[in-house]
Image 1 (cartoon, rainbow, N blue to C red):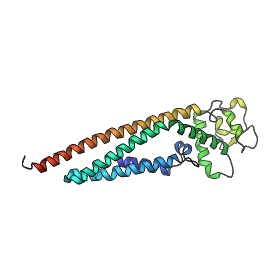
Image 2: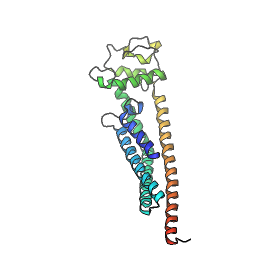
Image 3: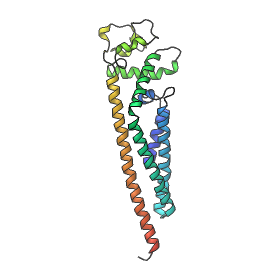
Length: 229
């Protein structure tokens, strides 16, 4: 079940590009979503395969299958520790990359020659509209966008409007003045905590399974040495 859960999550992350996480980490040289998806896909596949071996080995009491299961579980255990350490060590680097990505999206927003980026812009609009914020740090960031008809325009999502346009002409007093950075930082920290909690939970589960399988292996070996006891 654990392996299948990781497989499902990794496939969703790899193929679904209509979410904030994918928008922030899947552009140009920054392909963090792809890397994470591949790692989770690999770990999930190994766990699923070895779990089948472990189940068969425990039912049939086959020592070599149980040893193989324990070996792979230890390997996955060490890999997960390395990933957790890497996440915590690279947190600030990732945070800087994501700020750069937001700035890039704001610069490209509304560019008629980049129609394939419209799903990304729609996600940015959803964030600004729902959080009642505008730009990463504040509304003045939109002055850098060169795709407006005039310099006074801002995204329609920066005001209380249901207009389905990229830009609107509005009065300054009707715009959202606060930037989205505070909300995005909170979202980032919460996701780091969730990833860490999930990782620690997986490690505890694997420690339990490794211990249980090791004890089962000892019992099998003991019964094979003294079969009449």
